[in-house]
Image 1: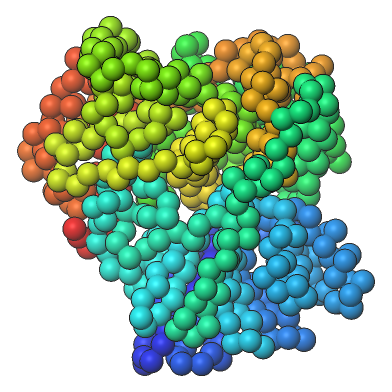
Image 2 (image 1 turned 60 degrees about the vertical axis):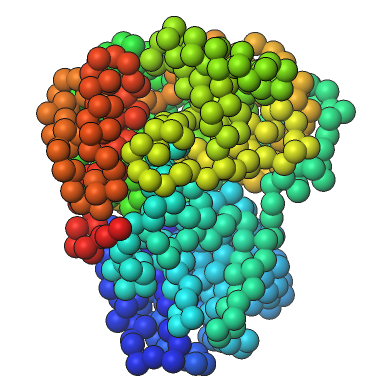
Length: 625
């Protein structure tokens, strides 16, 4: 796990090495075990690659990056993990390749030299990398299938630059520090800028499952994997529930086993739900050493899953570590949170605190249950979205407006269903039904806050089944832009690698190719997952209503965090790049609505986070609009 950066600058005296050095220094937290930058001979200008290293495989100095294959001259900088690297290493050794390290990085490099860009189809894992192909004079950038690891790019007529974080792009001078109005509108709509865009003009994200090859000033993009195509090709609607459960059980076991490979201390993030219980059960079964689990708990019984966590730990025989979190912990962590935050999301504080607890427990890598809700149907949207589509199709617009108004008046502020009133009234065409419950601010509210409108989109193909429409939408938007982004940045801020067995691409393909009836039918929110693991899971994990790991921010924003948040929300002239883009009177009104119990906490919290991000993290870059 690392932070990587690089630049190929054409027709200029500007030093690529100096810029890349500045970029890697801005990501020193991602690589506490060392870093380096190398100059490379390239046509048309100057090229440099740099990396910061968090050692997980082969902890010796031999695993340092940038790494070169002396037989071909190819050089790689790599972030992430390829979990099947040992199998690939055996294949490459049989083809005459020799290895000097025990790292997956070296296997990826030799795999490229052997198979070219086709090597990507052989890799199982989470990764983003750049390879300088000295023989072809070509720079290749690539990202894993589901977008677990980020890779930001800035391409102009005079350069191509990339890095693992936006802060590195700015520190290297690869982009101007200007706020993107479209990115801000997307953030206000769904709590995060939506890929491939970002909050910074001129900086984009390489799409998942994609390779981009630069030959001097020209480039071509290749999509080597697309989940929608894979699911359509593998559709297995005829499989029965028992056969499907067997297939999923096999994929789950392989996914967890692959992610146990580590030369550094490894554990599991354990909550009280079925996802982390699944990962813990399989990891405890296959681990070659006592498994350590880490949990964050609250004193408030409405939010704490302490009893469920302890029951899971006892059943699986893990060495369990608990960290108790209170409002003071959140308040004391805010400055560090915003220093770590690369792009704002409304949901980063919880992951920051959990990663801090895991690192404090002596772990360098952990397994997480992230992705289980998206793949196995754990979110309310899997039930609500099909109903919304039927209502929109058969109910006249005027009735939809009446129904939406009724929901707004009668549903609890905390209810997701309350957020769909504008969608039912057909006043907000920017979101598909599958994302209506994710909306933080409506189209009209975004227009009131800022003059920019959120763009309409639909991430699911028309032929997708109702279950898969929701799965595609949740994975493309909330999972990739919020959960995975926060997991990467907040984990790396602590020097912690977080692995994602429930997002193993073969597992995801297997589940989504099944018929909806197989995935939906049965007790509990994730019946297929429950059938697949059966008696290996503790009874409470099968019975529990979905809770998720959520901080009691509604309470904290009315108590210990109120003065901090309120000071930002009530500023008559908010100031800073984000504050200058928002109407301060509208912001103050929204804060008053929250205090009066008429608005969900996520809305004011999202504004507070964006404002602090704009004022703090980018202060040194004079971020503008």
